[in-house]
Amino acid sequence: MLKKKLMVVALASLFAAPAMAEESPVSFNVGLVSDYLVRGISQTSGKPALQGGVDYAHESGIYLGAWGSNMSWITDFGATGTANIEVDLYGGYGASINDDTSYDVGFIRYNYLGSYTPASGTVKADTQEIYGAITYKFLTAKYSYSLGDFLGVANAKGTNYFELNASHTLEEAGVTLGFHYGKQKYVGPDADALNPTASYSDYNIKASKDFSGYEVAAMYSSTDATGFYTTPAASGSKKLGRSTLVLSVSHGF
Image (cartoon, rainbow, N blue to C red; front, side, top):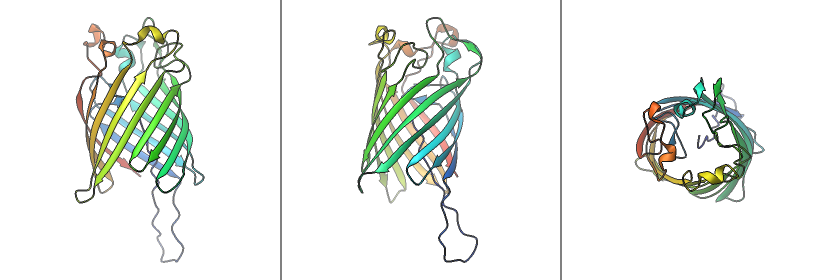
């Protein structure tokens, strides 16, 4: 999932009245991606995903949201049964420190819906994290911390992900460029045995442009993830952390 920005849509007034139109605290988003990546790792084995969510943003800075997508990685790695939908529930608080600096803290739970038996040596994929981020002008640093089992790895409290994100808009072209670097580190009694195999870094470069409310984007993503992120032969031995180009279109309303 790696991230869902709140979008508040201004309601235009239907009457010629002096009062200002109020902003709705609720917004929606829908999108289609050619490959669903989380922290550089494909969740759909390179196949497309349809995604959407709803957000509530209070003027105090408190926000709540839900977001969903199709995915296949759980069964791709050997789980039996049905598990093809991810639904994320999150909430937090964000505020400005000054004109250039803001922060955001929150909680997110990744829910993987379906009836399935985890692959041998793994547990249910549902995961809970807390996170904190600080933004200065065009640069954002964010740290996410697992509260327990992490994406099928048991006893992984403390597993964490640190990321840096930067953006720059080319005003004349109307194109926004995004740059990302992240470091995933596994921690915990069971997770320690996975290192350094499971821990990895990822980066991506993204260009997006708005067309009448529809954002069209292209992103190049790559990682140094090892064979740990390769599906079993029965699922085609696909490298889920490979370098790839992702195309997407999304709309907020």
